[in-house]
Structure formats: C-alpha cells, structure tokens
View 1 (cartoon, rainbow, N blue to C red):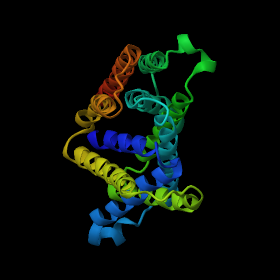
View 2 (cartoon, rainbow, N blue to C red):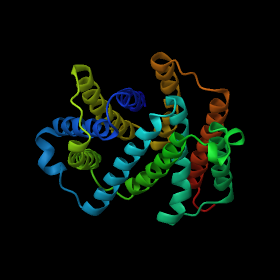
View 3 (cartoon, rainbow, N blue to C red):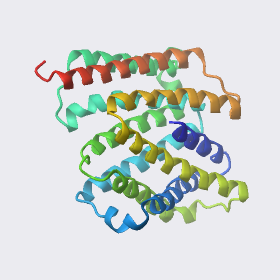
Length: 276
C-alpha cells in the first residue's frame, strides 16, 4: 500500500508539469521494464496466456483506471482521492452479482448503501449539490468503478500466473500510451525523468508485493491492509502539499472503510458456511 500511494503521489507531483498522457506513459513504460527484469529467463514462458481476450480487457480497464485517477488526482487532495477509491471493493460486491452471477443478500446491500453515503459525505453533496461537485471527484468515482470491474475480471483469471497478468497490464498500457505520446510529449529535465522512472518502479513493486502477500497469507489476512493506504495518503498529502483531510473526508472514510470491512467479513462468513 505504501508503494501504491507513493505511485499516486509521484504522478500527482509530475502532473503539475507534464501532460496526463506523458505521466501515464512513464508509469506503464518503466513498470514494463521492471516486470521484464523480474521475470528474467522465465519471460518466454510468462508471456504466454490461455486467455488473451480477458488479459487484453483487464489491461484496458487498468489503463483506463489509471488515466481517470490521474485526472482526478490533479484536482483533488491525495487523501480525498484515496478515500473515494475505497469504494472499489464495495463496487466489486455490487458488480459481482452482474458479472459473476453471485447472490448478494440484504446485509451486503446495506453495506453498499452505507458506503455510497460515505462517498457523498466525502464530496459534501449537501453543500455543493450535483452541479457543484468537483470534476476531479467525478473522475475518481469513475476510476473506482473501472477499478472494480478490473478486479472482477482479475477473479476470472485466477488460473493464470500473476506475473503473466502483471506483464500484460504493464505492456498494454505502455504500448497504447506510446502511440499517443508524440502529441503530448514535453522533454523532461533530470528531475522529470526521475519522477517518470520512479512511478514505474513503485507501480511494479506494489503489484509484486501484493502478489507475494497473497502467496504468503490468506486473502482474509491480506485484504484489510488495503485500508492502511489512507495513512500513507494523509502523510504524503501533508508533507508534500500541506493538505490535511477535512473532517468530512475522515467521517466519509470511516463510513466507507467500515462498510467495506463489513462486506468483506460477511463474504468470509458466507464462504465458511455455504449452506447459509
């Protein structure tokens, strides 16, 4: 989670100088190089997939999520964006009933509703109204939705080697943004190159650590740690931009995290007692 928020902070800082396409390109291009280095001699085997269509769709979803999030993070404080993205696990539960045909009972639907209420608290809908919502929040909400869809399709690729999925998502993003790059390129200085390279390293490292975490421990142990990212986001936001989360952000975060954990524990309970 520290790596992922470091990635977000790096991209937010780079977006102050460089275009959306260029920053997104750096994130995927240098992540691809890191992924190739990690795979090493196993690369020819790992680039083979049994589900090229699903891998391509999943890659497009992650690339879209990154682009939408980058637009949002350029306009909103880092802790606010991180809090809104906490909606992703809640949206996964909602979308699983559509894509995976999983039954979602009233308890989990209650958690979903509370999570959405928490998101409305974060954006202070009662003060701004629909017409006054910051455009950045709209893009981050969209990113949470595409990220949830990305996670749904990740479930469908459980039989694939995680490194294969990592290679496909990084390489697809690098290829697409490289095609668009000539129209959005601004030659970076030394510090700019460092930001682009570091963003790729953080992105690749975050996914690798996550793979290792799920290999070493059950999902029930690993998954709740995703909410620790609010700590990292608050720290980076304050140190770099002197942003401190508003009270509404913290209240909304508590509602979203609480509902997300409730849904997660409920799903764990149902998995342990399928007859119920």
